[in-house]
Length: 291
Image (cartoon, rainbow, N blue to C red; front, side):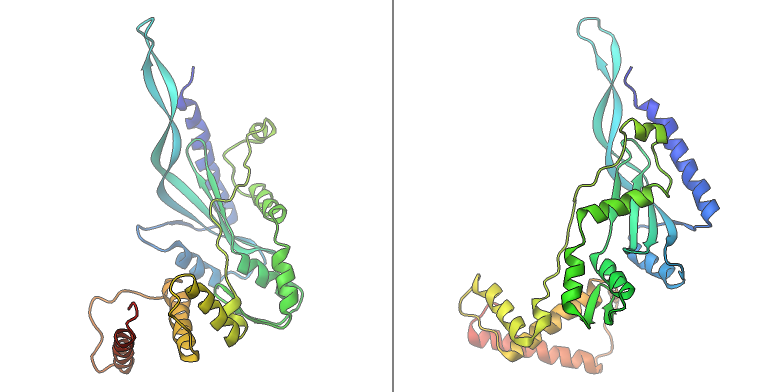
């Protein structure tokens, strides 16, 4: 008889296994607060982590996820009700295993605690690159989410090109063998195992970092597809790079906060921004360009 009640012992055993693992590994369990940036929590734990690899901490959060539920259906011939499994969604506990791998650097593996126990692996290719450059002794200047300079750019590109699905799958298998798993060894031997598929991938365009002339050509090519009257001068390129770098380095990483009140009007930085904004508005109006 089909019923989701059969999954309840699996869920309870999985959660109990996580608690036991946390105690055995002395890994802190953190309950994520609503609206809290998980990456910021991971960064704080990473500051004091001195091992080549291991578990940073285990995060817990309630999130909506696809599940299977039991509903009662009516047999039109007999008039009797019977249970039936249907697809649905529910708010269930998820556990985030934030770890550090010797080859991939920081990553996390997230599990849902209810059938079908969906999982998500999140890695950062920039961290993989930095780890490999350090292993090969290639001098480089790391950024929070990238590499500013590298003594051997061709080798760095070759390392990136070799980051394959096979290597990512090997990372998953390695840590699935170490971390608590919702399925027993017997279940896995019967075919109940995780397979990888890509949900989201982000790629960086590095053309603007090569040389100013390359960056200008990049912006002009993008603009040419939209409106032909725009041309990018050296000053325009500086302006574009300034704002894109401000977004990439300050706003996107979550280093900024929204202030409840305006800073003092005497702020030099505020005055400079006000003057810049006024100048750009006036220029757009004179040139009859889209502001």
